[in-house]
Length: 109
Image 1: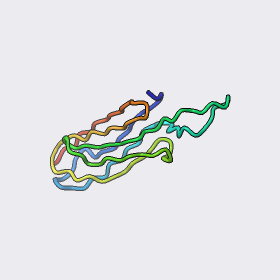
Image 2: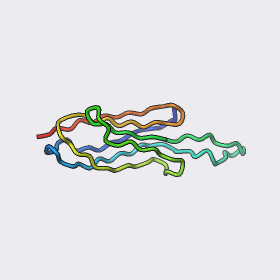
Image 3: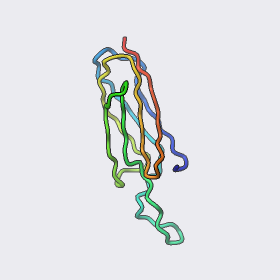
Image 4: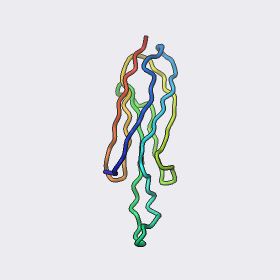
């Protein structure tokens, strides 16, 4: 597991049924490409977030494959339709097998 990894998500607390909301995500991660060398000349192993998913009440909203060229601390912003009250589940997958998850609830009123 990479050290210092912290996912952050911003989702509105409420929405109208069928409304498109903006979701913002950021994960603190070094995103090492595997191309750099340390001070001793050794290759620093690749360690990136290679996939991001978001589900709403168990249904896929977005599924993104990330490549080594993505920046440190990847930020993703997207829109989602909210048909009902429920829970968003955000998942980031790391090269080393680590999985980072965050959930946020939204109320439709």
